[in-house]
Image (cartoon, rainbow, N blue to C red; front, top):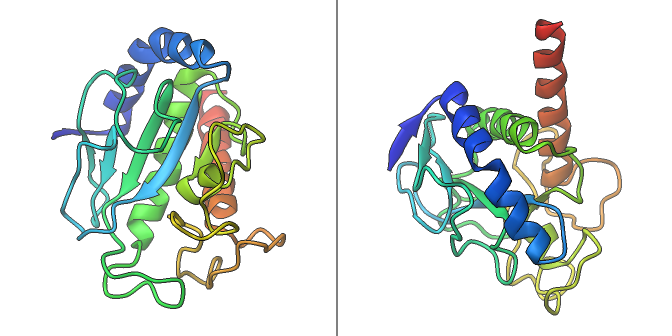
Length: 200
């Protein structure tokens, strides 16, 4: 694994942008950032994901080529970047167990989304940034496969809730902004706006 900071990640994502777009367009869509948890421990990283975020917020890459296909999301890997929090071992829909997402991980994931979206020229919305659960239920309106997320059997429900006061419980039908994907996209847009304000 390659440890990087946000500045290095931006350079790597910028260098990968053309190839990411080419692969996504060959699949008939825009690039996507798909958000996961590993269902492992805080320091266990996997090369299924381009980016792993440890419990203390370190960013670790499995590759410097973000256009490389990693096996993170069924029938959605080409032209998509998989970002995973190293957490959620033993989690279930009632209790996130002893390894819930840490506050640091959540904030770093939001910052990573903002950096990737800037580098790849993407809007931070559900069409371009989804949790694995949202992608599994085809919530972006694309249907590469039969749905298998929290609204359809719950085979994959990564980050459906975060176990925080903002996102306290499992409720895939919530429309009040408390689903994990809503929180992460909101935070990412906030970080993106902060960066734009700094630049000017």
